[in-house]
Amino acid sequence: MRTSFRFQALSIVLGAVVLISVGLFSACKKDEDKPGKTGLNLFSIEDDIKLGQQLDQEIAANPQQYPILDPGQFAAAYQHLQRITDQLLSSGQLRYRDRFAWQLKIIRDDNTLNAFCAPGGYIYVYTGLIKFLDRESELAGVMGHEIAHADLRHSTEMLTRVYGVQVLLEILLGGSPGTLANIATNLALLSYSRANETEADLASVAYLCTTEYDPKGTAGFFQKLLDSGQGGGGPAWLSTHPAPDNRVQNITNEADRRGCQGGGTFENRYLELKQSLP
Ligand SMILES: [Zn+2]
Image (cartoon, rainbow, N blue to C red):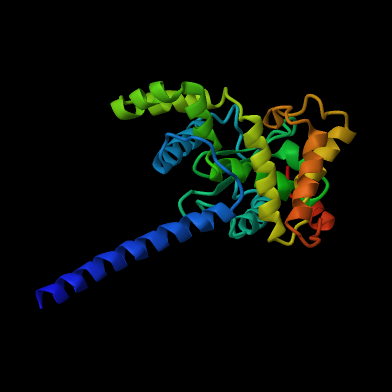
């Protein structure tokens, strides 16, 4: 009786261990199938979320530098961008689809050829970038690239690299108030690593591959930069490395490797988006 009871108890415990292991294993396996191999990151998911909220508030409080296009007045423009965002988020390829905010804002600045996504999923797209491009798939590709930086937590990975493990452990464990604020402020001054840029390029292919868009959308953007003679300098988010021509090739190779089927470019719909901007 006692033996049987102990055996049963042991079975239950073993069963639980097996279940947990299987659960963990399948969770890892599932994540490994998703794009990007993230490097060392000492921050928690909560830190990403808090950093993003803070940056979002700083941007909202600085309309001079970040004039946000009014979502009420320019509802059509936001609807176009939301359609693109929804498809990227529904790709099944994101790690933090349900954890991060994934908010979308348009910055009214025709001279800035840029988009960015703060940690925790705060997406910003400049009117300058929208007007520069000709195809919806290109904008979808660039937005996918930015979303990937947030979903792969490249900002906090970068901070881990820049601050160094020792310093960060002291800051994070010390919990001195305002430290995260200082870190957030410094974020704007730093740039992603070359490896992070490549990861984001490849992730954008993975996202687009499941949507109605041409999976090589980001390559179209780089090609246009090269064609217009801006490939060398280019906007800050390009970081000029890897060189745009290499990136076009890498993106094309990744689309082939994944066996992505076609996808559209949607020029007409994109023209409507451009015309809905001020
Ligand atoms: Zn990037």
